[in-house]
Length: 421
Image 1 (cartoon, rainbow, N blue to C red):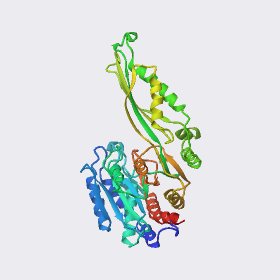
Image 2 (cartoon, helix red, strand yellow; image 1 turned 90 degrees about the vertical axis):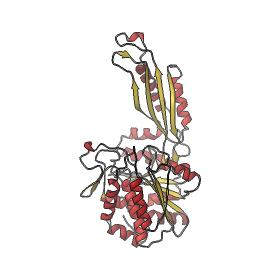
Image 3 (tube, helix red, strand yellow; image 1 turned 120 degrees about the vertical axis):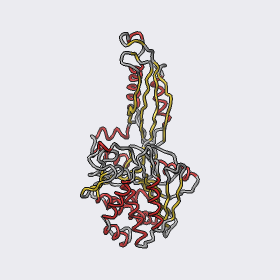
């Protein structure tokens, strides 16, 4: 997993000789309680800034919320071409009583348990180790390296990253986001993500006594029927694939078919997925509910305009005057050309570093990769993991941490080769 095509021997040797340092560093990062909400990441970010500055990196701290700072650490390379590594230091919440292991970090043999070990403090630990390997061996990277660690990704927060990209204060030429794109038996490089549309639909009925339901109009019944119609009509949409490489679609399906049935894996990309995420209504069991509310999560390839999804939902409501869309959140999906240098370089390295099949694919969800792609930055997501992100007793392994670090260390040389190629 550490062939001699990419990265100098000094960097590879440092990573190979210090796996315990990498494991302990990641454990310390996991030990910082950065559950979001509330998402207080200040102490952890301060420690990471101290680490980068001690290694000779130039650090730029920024943000609009003092409790949730961000940092960009830069190491100049032989070329001004800038490769940026991105990770978020916040995690989803956890309930400690549900865990058999310490959610703030517990090492047991080869395993490190804790919230964020997969998503995505494990990748951040690997990135810090790569920074050490270059700095402590006095190795000049072939391109300029940047590490952007941000604080508010898990709640889709807007605390400065998009604005910094928009005004060119952050202007990388390519980006690797350390989201866990692999599982125990299969790995991938994510080159795109789907659009999402989150409509809120409300239904106004008519209250009556629960013993005489025919005198009222049950808003829960009415809304549920509307949602069934929406789900069916959205799933019937034939998603166009113009502009998306056929091999990427095929590999996306093949990746998910490793642990879903073939039909379900194909449906992820060839039709919208529809999830009823929240449903509420009614005040008492003996009252016909006069109002109900639901939130849908609709995901689809970026080849479909989100407006088309909203229009189809509105068509479903056309014959039901009592049903209205009261709110909509949405974001267009994104896609990086598979022939771009960052995709080719990362895929080539990952295929050599991990022992399992590697697929180039669309991610089913979204994250900071969308922000970078929207700013015109060719971006991939990669980290090998265990498939336990957001789960109770989430964990990673020392081997996976080391493979991530070796891959991240090699990509600068691989991308430099691709650019010359």
